[in-house]
Image 1 (cartoon, chains in turn brown, orange):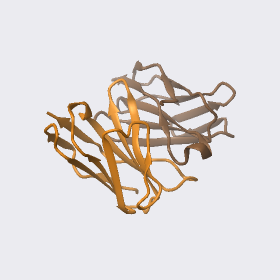
Image 2: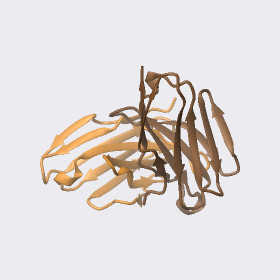
Image 3: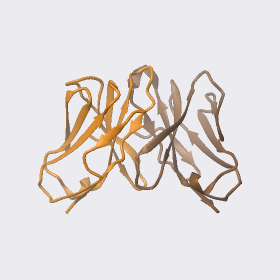
Length: 113
Length: 113
């Protein structure tokens, strides 16, 4: 079953604006990961945040994790048209899940030039 | 860089045909995964494998089987293709349980007529 749920389902912004996507999950996790998918292609790993971390940065990406609320957010700053893609969160439920991840349904981000 | 390749980008088959989808990774990863992706349903795990000759059912294994005879290769088999198996199929691999970020292939868009 899908654990991660992204919000919003779709987001349209202008180039230069920030984009924030949220992910909620239901069970305890070992880590949470964000992926990006360009149309018709495979997913690309963006960033991983472990359950004992609260915030992580990578370039223009900032991820936060609130395990008490079982939620995460992905912030893309100073967006570019090339950031247009679908973004997925994926949760690792730890030992009970082995190495498998559970993906949400994704947020479709459109950045208008 | 990890490279995951899939045997075909596009495939058209007829109902009842046996279909083989091949996936190869070149970084000695222990884990390999097969997903299908459908609009509105996100990524759903079909089967995964932790080691050679080992397989585990995912969330939607019905109508599929897999084979992992060599560490680098993970095959998905549709024994008798049906129209409801028309989908995008994504293969992924990850190093091991402790390092489980997944690397995806480009996907195979399968159409069953």
